[in-house]
Image (cartoon, rainbow, N blue to C red; front, side):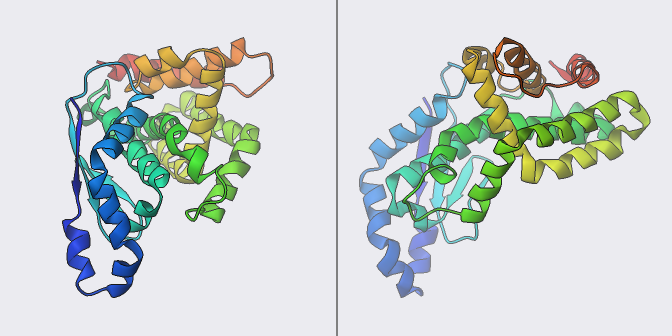
Length: 267
């Protein structure tokens, strides 16, 4: 059974020298601690809703600490105390991070076996698929939600603008894959270009692709193949063919490249 431990020790140490944080967040953090069992269950339910059906025995630690942004690594999730002021914000953010960590545990290829020239391509595809699915846990709150104090207007505006103009973003992504397919000697260079493309565009692109996959009734197939990013992109093309509305799809050259990488690396 999955377990999530709450660690407030860093926050409590910080309080000794920062009365402002004491006034703002002490009661909120105490409320989270008292209601932790219900909140833990909500996080697990939310994260598990977009994962393959299985028994997860992983243990995570959520550390409430003062930082510039939330961070996730090695089963530890650091969350700023400001997110404790609204339960929905806290649950959404932590559930997304739990989901991401579990997705990386489910990868169906050995990252240490990936050739240097392929690393940029695989990392980009991996991030687009995992974060695109994970954004369905919390984008409804942080990007499309209104009337809450965690609105990052710049991030939300850019995210929504990319989704609205997805054809241009998709074509740029497809173009890089097509170039890689046509000129293998440029694979490492273009793979790095793909990685540079991902930070601003990867999450909204993956979010959009996930929408199309779910809309066309491929949710179960998508979840059962989490950990295989190659399948995510091929499944999107499959969903596009089923949809009644014309929308961008991956070119034959891009799909050929994805098939070659899948055959090369999938366990």
